[in-house]
Length: 91
Image 1: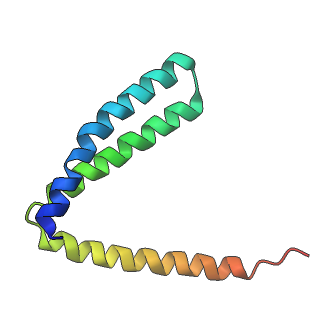
Image 2: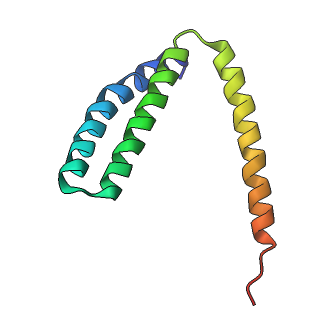
Image 3: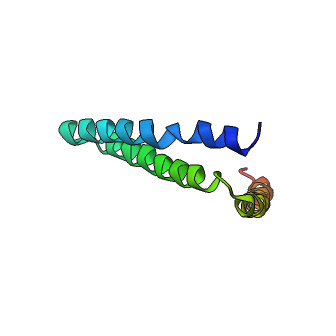
């Protein structure tokens, strides 16, 4: 799988995600459901992130390097959280 393949897969996420998010948000507003509105916001945010990824994976080696560093930093933070959480004792 190369960047062109990833780009083609990701490009459909914002298209379907934005319409699905709009429909879910409409339903949440109609039923006055806070949880449904939060789910719609989540879908719309994921769609926005997907559109950024689709844009950057077109011809972006720099994006791959940045993603590598961000994933390593994220791993470090999650590992530290897991380590500190392991110290918690409930007697």
